[in-house]
Image 1 (cartoon, one colour):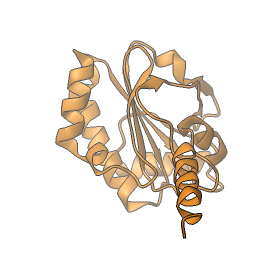
Image 2 (cartoon, rainbow, N blue to C red):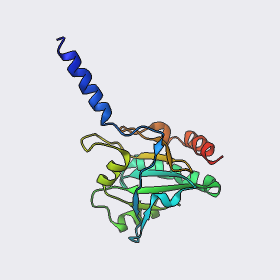
Image 3 (tube, one colour):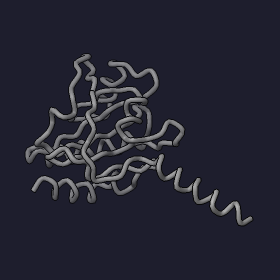
Length: 171
């Protein structure tokens, strides 16, 4: 039994090392593919407070989060808030993204990417389970200030919490 304790500690630390990267940290570069096919670098939004929602277009949680983000965009967009949706459905197409935007009245850009590119961006190991939506909030200097954990983060889907967080970053 004594030999199992150090082994369990090593496993626990190893599991922590594989977890999503800590915040705050500099946002890695990320390429967003728009439904038109145009590719945009995340770094091109430096100077704005950016929120990325990584989502599946058919996920009810993601759809609700998109509605909340759209509301905050209408309210805080004029002050420099810039949300971006990134669909990561398997086999996602331009049409699927366009249908999602139309159906949910999303007022901000929604593009798409591969789940592998998202894993690299989030600092997530392939074998880790990931709940969607995944929300990332980046300040005007390009530093990630908030990021969902593997199992999501109810606070980052809460309208009042997000309004306060984004508002503080916009000041």
